[in-house]
Image (cartoon, rainbow, N blue to C red; front, side):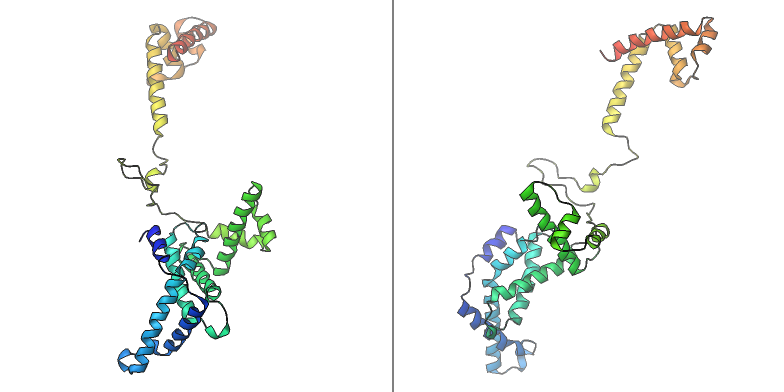
Length: 292
């Protein structure tokens, strides 16, 4: 079921009145002693109580699904791998537990009581299922508070606060939070999809397909190097044969042994300075060809 369909189904059921909550709560409390018993062993009256209580529990759950949606929405910014539907499903588990624990004789509103159970179920599922390394519930609560307060300060001031500033404001020990952030860093699957592709495009790539391989040369560098190699070869081919030989010998091109100006001049019976000046003029000509 998609998020929109789930949201629509939750709003199909009307909210319960205070009188209905008390009435259904009493029926559920009457049902609980017979819930774990074998139905075949129940007499007619007990079976009627059980059937009535199950219908009342379903009505309590359906009438409070909107509360689950609101609570689950508050946690969407703190999860990476769990979807909004996952949070809602975990919240429903907490809501079911709340209907069975609710005592209508105490005079509390059911939504106030159920809110705690829904939030506890979602927090517990996040600490157990969101990360490969499980985070204690109290630490997860602290991280959620810090994340929420950080966003509030950023919206108000336009400046990202430090961890120490947020922890001081919330009364949390910064060193424990920093340790949790280091040890329980978020993980991402290498098969994670990088996004939705446009219509007609090829399927989107997985994260592993976009990771840099240190053993493979960057394509842009390959293109640049190939282009520069071609430009250099063109410039060298336009030099006189003698100067081409000197450039090749001085820089060790094409496998030649590198020689100094003095060594080249000695082989040509000219001075070192004469070789340097000739090569300097050659470089000027080559630059004009390569970068024109």
